[in-house]
Image (tube, rainbow, N blue to C red):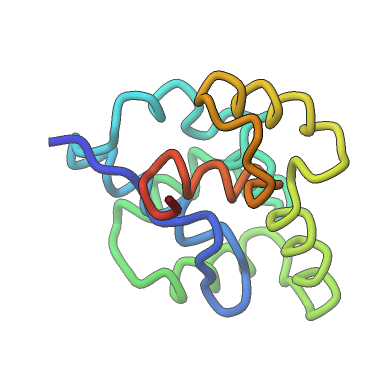
Length: 141
């Protein structure tokens, strides 16, 4: 059974995307993660890698920690201890990046191409990569 991970808009302790990354790790370990996601797991230039870089933890170490068990909150605290502790300003920066990716930035051409491939180039309500992911995974009509 293949399953899609949580929405990129979900948060753990105010940090957007983090629950999705952990969900992908858990689903992959159980062999339930949709095959489309396998190639980008932890990839440096993909969202997981960017998130790990922002936290200053290595994806491999994070994966190992997630597979040991624990809540998302506990694992985020582990990231703060092993990498760097985020303050409110860091969360504003990260959430601004994570929520607006694809809106008037370097990822806009990728978003527009993906919308064309999905046959939704005219959709004005899908303006970010997170919007597209939620559409693609059936959370947005």
